[in-house]
Image: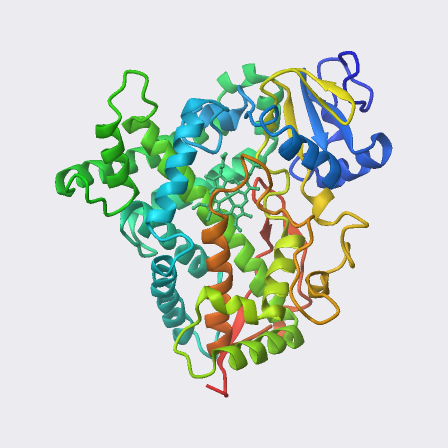
Length: 467
Ligand code: HEM
């Protein structure tokens, strides 16, 4: 280890600390190592050093106090090579990332984020969910594809001014490609390829990763061609039109806007906005269904606040303290992006007294904050009281950071929060969700991945008698 680098377990030649890690589920390992080496420690994946950052104090020092120093993304990793430093999620700190982050935030707002226009888009998708649930009254159903489709469509309406059905090519090409890539990236062959990039040349499953990305990009190129034919410059219908306007405006030689860049960019936004929100929502429905008393308490509140209204608005959340607490507690325990998106240092810097050289991979361990002792009333159990004060009012502790913090924090938080409120409120108002008698005990353990997901489960749907 370099001088004054964070401590860590002894290194094994060639492998570094790879033997310390459980492939496909390293979270327990990270916690075990934190107990031995403290909140900032290091691990070597083969010869690549990584600094693991734990607990609110260290995470804030890295991502907020020294935000710029830690705002890079690691280069040379498999996932980074998949997007070729294009798009926004994995783009390294620099003009391309800045321009596209600014563009994304401005256009998400222009197309409704935080406003009633976005609420309307969400309500339109809720109608489709309600139709599917109506068709399944009295039966048991898996909510997975229904929720995934809805969250995907909400983002698609903003990006492409379109929505898709379960059997459309969009779903087959893009969503199946994502889920296949997620499985491959969690597997042994990817871990080995990260540590020993030379292995990428072998015919391992990782070659499929690049093929899936290419297929998705080709699909967006088709959408782009259609948009070019039908658009009216200066009157954007969606993100693609806006992007084309921006390209026409920004004709400078060093402009960071280009058609190839746009494909990765919209796919980034679609992926980031769909996988995270749908897995959070699925975890929420798992808890609501398997904890009927909590479900009923939410329903009483919803009925009281929405009395006489056709539909909920995002503003109603201020009167739904328990519902808010339930949603936030689910986000806390679901820990949907467990290792954040990996960061990297862009200069030689320091963290909690240690020296971290430029270009070091930095992994903020979000679970260490979301269940940090001293930050929560009940750090290790599911309990909405974590978000309620003595008067039963909703409060958000500082350690609640599922969207991360600092200059790279999630740019879709506003949209995600609207979806996570409006969809469950509207469904709980109309339906009672029942844990099927023959389903056994609910399993709350999660499936590890870049995005965590709940174990598959089924629910039984009944119309509410009060409606
Ligand atoms: C419950 C839902 C969501 C969760 C938990 C979540 C969480 C996160 C986290 C932890 C990061 C990494 C931040 C960092 O690197 O420090 C992130 C980044 C990002 N998220 Fe989200 N996200 C959610 C929904 C969304 C939505 C709906 C969108 C957009 C439509 C979105 C777009 C992005 C983008 C583009 C980035 C990359 C930002 C950058 O690198 O500058 N996310 N998100």
